Every structure is written in structure tokens, then in C-alpha cells.
Image 1 (spheres, helix red, strand yellow):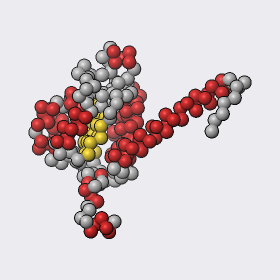
Image 2 (tube, helix red, strand yellow):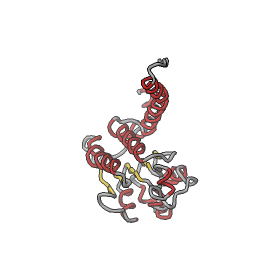
Image 3 (cartoon, rainbow, N blue to C red):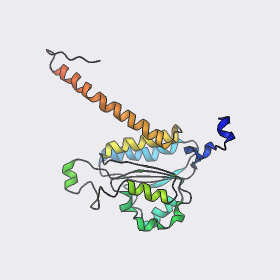
Image 4 (tube, rainbow, N blue to C red):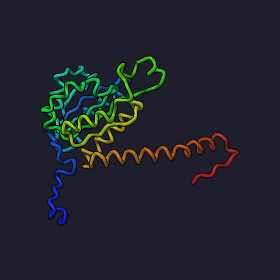
Length: 224
């Protein structure tokens, strides 16, 4: 650490402690799935505000209040050191790029955590029930990362794949808890999430083998 200091290293510029804990903002648009709404409401209202001591986290929980207007979008981002967004719909379809041209709203914003573009069961998606009519897989997520980087946001966490809302909520929760509660870099929190997910996937065949052995006690399956 002493050697880092001699070359002018400033730790506050290289970790998530640079985020002002009194300027945490969110817009959370939970889908109309009872289990997701229940778990999401508990996460946003009860758990997230307690992750960082003496922090202040405010925002809009759409299903409990209202859909934010363009002015409210600008207000939430402009007052955010960390801005979090969770929704079925791409952020740029809710807050179009044309409105982002006012770069002044990003003066405070140092980090964004974006979990959007969620899909559920294919049959429901085909009926346009659980995905935006504007959905296009080609313009996200790199468009968002590039756009907000140009706006001056230093750290941007965005999902690359469209997955089920239930999975997204768990991932969103893990990233927020890892960063705010454990003090990890956002990238490190995302890496730990990926490692745990890979471990779970690797374990699935063995779980299926174990279930098959239980159903057919006359056969033997070697498990390590």
C-alpha cells in the first residue's frame, strides 16, 4: 500500500466507496408475478436500505406507486451517486436516448446497476404479455454501456442475457448486497455471481443422477 501511495494511488477513486451513501436511487418496475412482487418489495423496502449503515436509498417502486414521468427519470438520475434499475423493459425504452442528451443529469452519477430485458416462458413472450413491444435484441446491452460511459458514468453493470424475472431478482439482489454490504467492486460482485452460477450449473447433472438412482434403486450410479 505504501508503494501505491508513492505513485499517487488514491484508493477512494478505485473502489465503490466513492459512491455517496446518501445518494442511492432506484427505479424498480416489478412484473405482475405475485412471487416476484412480494420478494422484490421486501428487497427494495426492507433489505437494500439497511445494507450500508447510515445510507439513504430512495426511488420509485412502480407497482406500488406509479410509472415515472420523463421528469422523474431525470430527477432520480440527477440525484443519484448510484442509480439502480430493474424492469422487464429495456431502460432506453423507458428513458429514450434523446432525453439523455442533457449531460448535466449525470454530474453526480458514478455507477449504474441495470437489470432489464427480462423474458419469461416462451409462450407468454409470444403473446407479448411479459416483454416490451419495442424489444430488440440488437441494440442492447452494449448500447447502454457505451451511452452511459460517454455521459461520464464510471461503473456500469448491465445484464447481457434475457432470463426469467425470478433469476434476475436474485442476481440483482446479489450484486447490490455484494457492493453495498460487503464493499466489493461491482465487477468483483458480478464475478462472484457468475462463479456461483457456474458451480450450480456444474452440480445439476449430479443432482439429476442422484434423483434417478433414488427412483431406480436396482441400478448403481457413481457420484464423487
